Length: 324
Image (cartoon, rainbow, N blue to C red; front, top):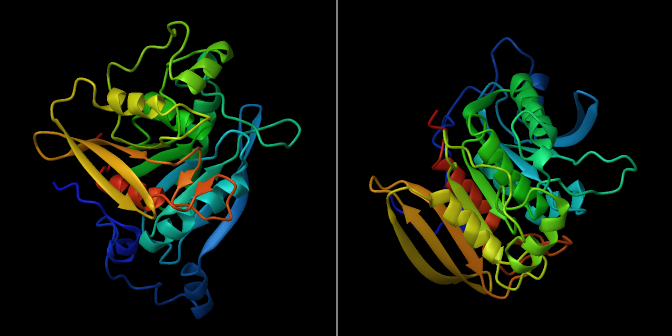
């Protein structure tokens, strides 16, 4: 399988092979009003209760036939960024809509309503069946149960703390999430308390070894990583480590590509298995800071000059349905 660059301009011509090319827009016995509503684009708010925790979320549904099972992407906002700015900055709805994907945006539960950061660095939130991973998995399964979702094509991505939590979900729920996207994030299990988080973010290493062990049964799911080389919030070495974790112990070769897109130069590293499958991608973007690459310039955490991270992540996810 090739690993050529797919640019944003090509996305409109790219179709997810899991979705049918032509399907009757609505059953013949239903009204025209139903057919119109079924084909319309929607972006709705909701709440989900898991134990004593209430999680708010937004769910994007692209236009099209509601009877068709669609892929689902779970998008996790950055620390203290807030859901609304993440939607704007990433422009993921626009990219997903062109491919017929649904997008779920959970919001970190807070007591006072202010934006808050996912607890990726806490031991109690790095385990399956506990804390935020359990809450997010419960919400994802609830959305799958309520909508026509292709369960082999459920993926997760995030920015900053959300990217770190996406890495946690990839390790703790590999049976739920087929692949992972991490933008400006941090590796799973590198720290397990708040005292080590600051050092990891600033310098790329922790002061002590964590207690968390990586899953020996499933390993790391296919992972795509974006990181700005001038990120002063999360050291770029964290992105490199996420990539290295994703390919550790896997046979294959590293391929390198240097290019320029959207006004910024980048280095793209790809790990390709002997059968041609891409296990992981790492995009290091020159001059970019702590912001979503290729995002909307009106977003607070968007770098409009960089390669289009949303489009590239979706292209990666299309090539990586679940193997379980």
